[in-house]
Image (cartoon, rainbow, N blue to C red; front, side, top):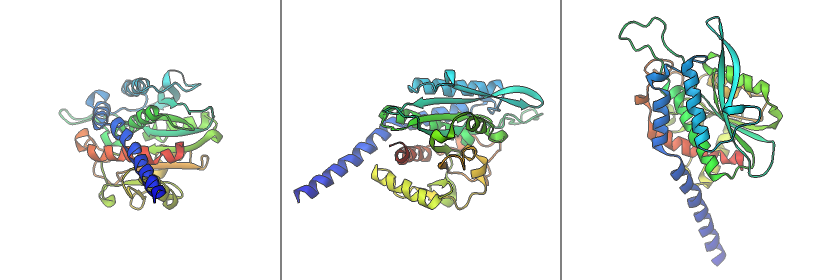
Length: 307
C-alpha cells in the first residue's frame, strides 16, 4: 500500500511539475503583442522581398536573440537568405532561424516552424479602402506560437535533440523558403518537422480543438494526446484532419514530406474561413484564449519528439 501511495504521489507531482512551467513561461500577453505587431498596418502585409518583410524578419530575429536562442552554424545573424523574383525584379526572401542546442552533443534536429510572410497590399486600392492584407491568423498567430515555444524549450532546456525554430518566408508564393532550406541542409539529420499555420481562430468543426495533419494522422494524434495527458495538458485536445481541404500540401512542412520521417502540421482554421486571404484577417478576429491554450498543449505534447 505504501508503494502504491508513493507512486501515486510521485506521478501527481510529476504532472504538476510539468504543467507549472508551461503556465509560467507561455504568456497570453506575449502572444497578443506578437500578433498585434506583425499584423499591424506598419508591416504592410509582410510580402516576401519587401522592406516590410525585412522589418518582420528583424522583429523575429530580435525575439530569438532575447529568448536566448543561438545562431545556427552556416546561418549567421539568424538569417537564411534566398533569391526570389517579384514582379520581374530580383530580390531576397529571408528565413529567420535560431536553435536551442541539445543537452548533450548530437547532430539530430527537430524543426519547429511557421511562415511569417503574407500577401502584402492590394494593388491600386481605392482611396479610403483597406488595402492591407494584415494576416493576423495567417500567419502571425503561428509565428506568435513559434516564439512562445522557442522561449519554453529554451527555458526548460531538456531537449535531447537540437531544436531549430524557423520562421519561413515565401510560403504564400509557393513554399519558397522551406523548399530552399530543405535543399540546403542534410535532411538525414532531421528527425521531425512541426509546422504551425493559422492557429488563432478555432474552426467550428473541431469544438475548440487543434487539427493535426500528417500521413499517419490517427496514430500520431493518439500519441500526442497520450503524452499531453501525461504532462498535465488537456484531454483529447488534438484531432485528426477531417474537414480541411489540401492544406497539408500548401504549408511549409510539405517541403520536407517524404524526406523526413515525422512531418506534422498543426492548424485550427480551414481555408474555407470567410477571413482566409482577405483584408478582414486582423488582430481583432483572434481568439487569444484559444491560441494560448493551443500553444501550451503543443509545447507539452511535442516533447514526445524532443525527449
